[in-house]
Length: 394
Image (cartoon, rainbow, N blue to C red; front, side):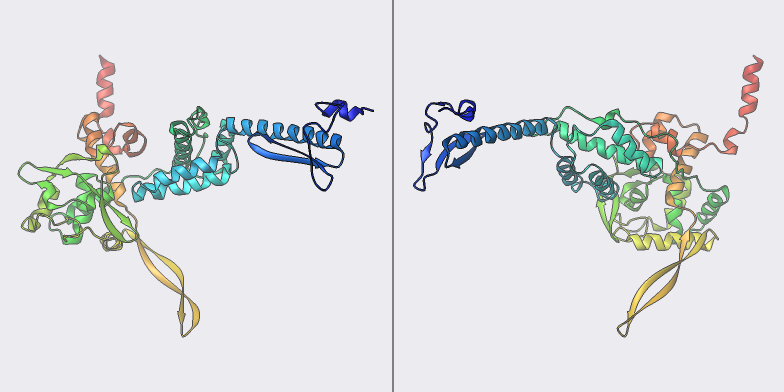
């Protein structure tokens, strides 16, 4: 008698043993390859073998379908993030310090998710929940965008989806804006330039060049053409821990020429006889260390009343017993990047065309000048009212 199960599952209900192998222990077995895997089903009842086979193939088909769906959703986010991190580790140390924390945050947020699963609104919610200033959030969005761009460009994945490009920076984020130095602080640098000590070169260099910290510390006497009145910016210093290392400028636009201002020329006059390899900050044959820079920069401003003390608490061990100590350190109230802002303000006051100003500060476009460096000072507004009144009178 042919059972219902035999009709449902057996290829030949009249002879359910057809296609099966009888093992020595009296058990019927069926073997075949399903989705590239060798599978086996066995039972004493041949109809039961075919029933197990049908159920097993159904499960295998579901697994194959799920796998295809996962493949369509792309790789795991952390796989692509890891690949991008490998690229970042080949970049400049300063870039690594900025990008690696952002990669870690993104990996924690979207771990175990497939690339195409992540929606633009989820990225927006993540950026909103960070509780960071606009610059940090913008950097985070850029890193997520770069991870997705790698997913698109990589020949293994060749993705076609980037939700970061469809996401806007949340509104109302706090903005940290560094202001230029006070007029009194600028005057202190000018007075120091009249008869400068070696340490006085630090603020003079940054006021007269508007350089980033690393670029200023990389200037050697050989980079200055005193006859032509030109400073050549070709390289920068980055610090790995405390030790300096020469590297390229922050961007390709950073390779440029600057005018040698009279204040800096006068300050450097006593040192022109030194070796062309001399670095003008530190006046030595090597770039200064990070601790040297910090110590001498703070010393200058502390001498003029623009530094404050902070208590740093630490742990030490004496005679095998740990104890807590408090150390007083000094921190300058002015940083060199503020003098970079001041330099841009000076360019504006001097009427330097914007396209020239952009090249002098080493940016690819004017956006950074508008958003970060440009500050309206009261003296820049002097006479503007009279000019507008004359225009309206016409």
